[in-house]
Length: 109
Image (cartoon, rainbow, N blue to C red):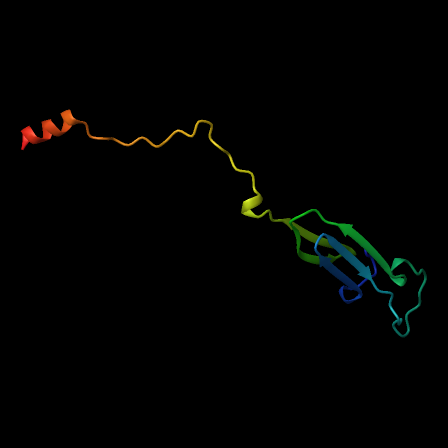
């Protein structure tokens, strides 16, 4: 999001449930001795609202070169993740001794 002219302390980011709100506050003061040639977006307050999908959370936010970068992460709970179900449900095969195997072991002893 382009926020040229705003400082980090001028911007509020609020995340609640499925809503992300970015607010920029208008500066109340001008640096002494500064001459303004053009008053752009930084002199006006703004508010942008973004509707987030389910299970999306805000991880972090950075402000660099007039761009606000907000990292979002989607974390689906394990209970909600899709699972593969095997068709037929083949059981694990284990060796079961037969009566002829037992007799061979008895004669060898």
